[in-house]
Image (cartoon, rainbow, N blue to C red; front, side, top):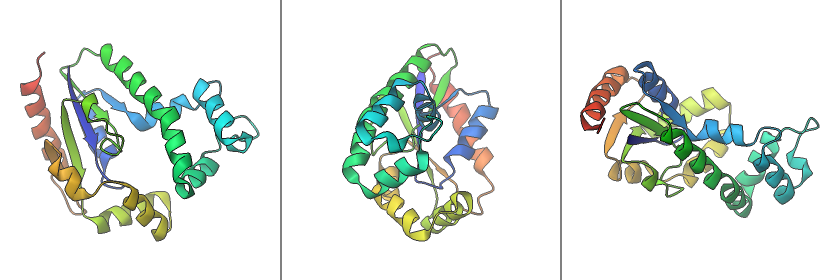
Length: 198
């Protein structure tokens, strides 16, 4: 099966692009969604996080303290690497398991940190959603209500837009006033169908 890796910087519109592909009946495998499932109550990864980072990373009901964990890894590079070492192998194994049972012509594998996690080998082609930095910041402030300094810190941990574009097979432009998003997706959909071995 043809596997298209969908990636892009924070606030570039990856979720919107995923939804447009989904409307064309394309299976979407989302690394963030898989990650959320892996840290539900009763999952082994949650217990590993508790052992590594302490019980304060759990709420009173035993669920993951997402805010506490996010604040910890935002301030502590070692903790961030430890968390990635716990979750990334599990995420990519689960995605591989899901791909194995699909029967579609192609699928979209949405991995926000595809380049940062050196996961390019997971997919056959890389589709980058791109937009200007001002639009990224504006969208994230509106969506997540984060302070500008924190957004800039997040952007600093991600590869540059130039790097993504240089390593992309396909690019979707999704700047603020872009009205052709659905058209770009449809065009790529037809292109991917033509490449599919099925």
